[in-house]
Length: 283
Image (cartoon, rainbow, N blue to C red; front, side):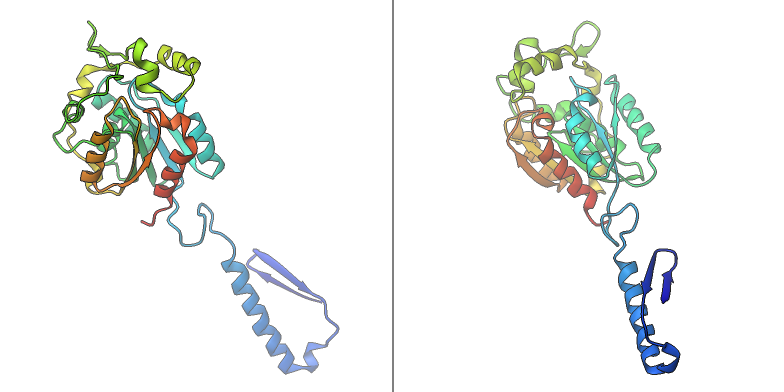
């Protein structure tokens, strides 16, 4: 019996009835055979943390929610990504200012143990445009999200196309916060979820400080990092034409999906696929 071990990775045991000492040519051939098997065996073992040897798999995904929502709506996307081997973290940004939301996102980025794909929805797109300048961020994913230029505000972008009749974003209240109109929430924000689901989303909405929409970004991460983007073709909260224009300017790899502003809930599988494409892209 001959037993061959390769760096504790694999062991091959071969039973034979031939005396190798009496057959030097056969012994030499066997050594060549063992060497070949070792090479094949080692190369077939995937490297930890990657889908395949030599790939650029980015395992960390950080997701930033938008205004009038929170991270809980991303549960289905989270489950898909987690099942596919990713480490996913949701940022619960306070929606009190651009500076505060960028700081909340940066705190999460700082805790990641390697490169990150940074994802933003709606207002979260403005946040990742600024926060994405972190050296840990390798690519950006905009999902029905704003992607401002340097010096540009979210409100500047809003004004570039007329709002849909269903849009329910209200003027600031006496505390300076903006809410979504209850009567228009279902049609304007999440038309493709059930009415019961929309009622819950309205009741748990996160109002945003009006001053956040008026704050210009000082750095645009999409200028130096690859970006991916989803246009929600049935979006009534951000005009899809605004989305297309921003993503063309950013040079993003664009996917158009039929869905409302809340398509991350109703089309979680397709949204997760775009995020995974960004994570698998070579760097």
